[in-house]
Amino acid sequence: MKSPPYSRLNSMAKLGIDFGTSNTTVSLVDHQSGQPKTLRIDGEEKIPSVLYFSNDEGEPIVGTQALATFEIAKDLVDPNEVRQILSGVFSGIKRDMNSSATIYLPNGESLSYAQLLAKFFKYIKYQAEESINNSTITDVCITHPVIFENDKKKVLLEAAHLAGFTNVKLLMEPVAASIGYESIPDYKNKGILVYDFGGGTFDLAFVKFDANGDKRMLPPVGDNNCGGEDIDKILYSEWDKAIFQQCGKHIANNEYDLDLPFLKKTCEHHKCFLSSYFAHKDVKSYTLKTYRHGKQVELNMSKERWEELISPIVDQTIDLTQKMLSIIRDEGFSVDKVLLIGGSSKLPLVIERLKEILPIPIGKVPEYDVAVALGAAVYINAPETTPKKCFCRKDGKELTTAIKFCPVCGTNNVRYDYKFDQ
Image (tube, rainbow, N blue to C red):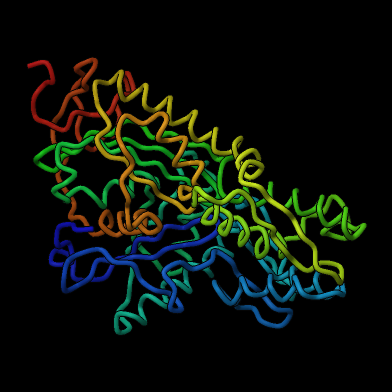
């Protein structure tokens, strides 16, 4: 991914953070090349969005090591030991957080969600500063889904400030993904559809870049109840039935409880495996195996059954995509390229369904897992611009480019100094 040399205009490092339900990606603009790049945290491109607090420590273990506690808990037999460990594990923060909730740690300390998330961002900030010779980082752009309550935005902003960032910008995830491609020659005069199917949410955006680098964007759309974690829970339900049949017990001690270690480690791993395995046309089924209640348990999964299980979730994304395609046509635009963002977009069924409705072939995007973070880095590093005079494409109302959508009809601005019909 190429972009303008923003670092030559802004020498101080600024971060882009794609804060995800399952994983978080961090990026910055490389000082020498002027190009956005991902920043490895603990040697990994993606850091699990998980924190673990022990009974004694006030500061958490973050990321990969925190996620490993699920593996430890999964193998324990004593339910009291499991509960003790899990009481200090916090995951799925992005879906759960709200400004009025109180969180209690194993050591008795209480935190707000902003204070909890601040510890996560503080760890990222520290690791980023270490990677660039201990330079202080004060500017950050954090991305969020299209449908994201103001209360959650408030938590994000407060958490970032508590973590030590002084200049904080928020940006919608699919918009961030499109920004990273503005300067690529292949994308000039192209209409880009961004299909973002992540761990917790699904988002769509459409942007048209012109030869001057200006863009026209239609209002993004999203679904907060549609993500990879929902597929994990479907697989969990199938495993629960198989384990009950073979062991006479449910996964959790209580039928109506959710065993988080099993969900996070076993189901997520099996989902990724099946997605890759069933991508091969000549395979029909696979027998999954796990160890539960003192014995090996098996779950035979055919490709047909797997697609039947995940179809309701995938169909939600396809229905929304069809609506967006209709809006794109009504606005007089065309889809020239498609960007597939998010881990769940790799599902073979997603590719098959999209091929049925898209007017063009789907190309491969190497940065699909990091495109949002790269775009966030480009956004926070872009120089401030003076708003230009422009006019609504539909009603001719005079606006400025500082206003994203026309307050009269909701249509996106035309970013030119003349009326559209002149």
